[in-house]
Length: 405
View 1 (cartoon, one colour):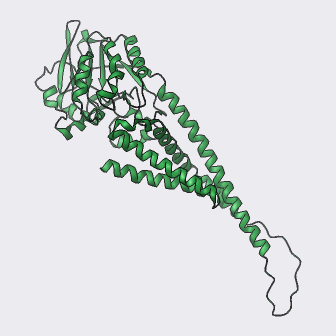
View 2 (spheres, helix red, strand yellow; view 1 turned 45 degrees about the horizontal axis):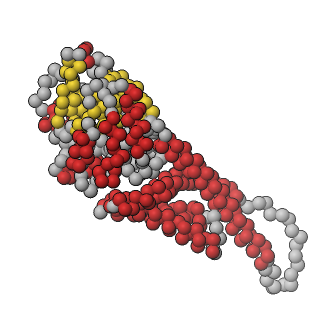
View 3 (spheres, rainbow, N blue to C red; view 1 turned 90 degrees about the vertical axis):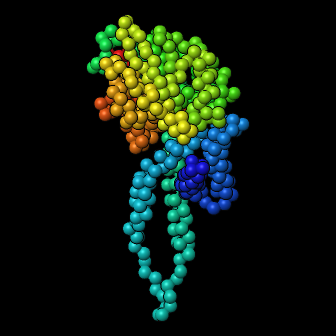
């Protein structure tokens, strides 16, 4: 309920601002302004229906393409219009400066008679003011529109294109030397859903297999819907190849589905992907052992299925190095109390759409890449898919090849 109210209020405010800058400032009262106003109202309804409808029922998934693309355009229109507010105000101020008045011949009038009115001059001034306002408004709208279209076009090409392979080497001080060189293919936030096809999954599986990794780690947010609708899109995961297996932990989006994460855990198990639900396994390599643990996402606490660090990490051999799979980077705040050497996470999408990357640190300790938090190294992958708009700006999709040293 809170999400719905926040979505509606924010959408209303944003569209009112767009109406002032793209409609009111660019048109005179009349039929054209009314038509554009109603068009903007229709787009407002589309955004609200897309956000709410696609979460409530798969029957409204057809709204996803137009709804999310307009959402991305709407967002960048606001960004560029806000940036243009200062130059717009400066141009408007400079244009208003009165010119030096021309010297006129004196006009003699009878004593006590009022000066003659100048209605033509007043009308000319009013027309000039309207012309000035429309010119500035239309110019601003044109620049913002072109910039938004270009940015969203670039972002769609990036989001729908192949993920970038990010090679990363991580040094773990107490790692058994025999484990040096162990390689993880890390992927998260694939987000199978209304805007992805089976080709999206097939490409990700093919790229992971080409890495010839020892372990595949899928760090949450695999899906955005139920098995009944998205099961066929997940079938390619049956073809994942690795020496020691593929492992999965839940993300927050697994808990948004109507039937919860359990049905996806069962589906993945049939596809050969093991879910680590507050548990750990031993990865034996060249005579040495690494503990690989996984915890549920924080959101699972709402249904008594949250992370249990004691269950996943308690009672283990402290001399062994431990790699933890946890969807959200913030989960390191608990992991640091259990002697974890490395945490692999996703969730942030690297911000996905600039400037959201500046907002992520308000909630998460790491936006993307490798960092150390509370003595624990954390690697946050940007994710191989997208959520919401099929747009990525400043944060291309990623599959990580992580090597332990």
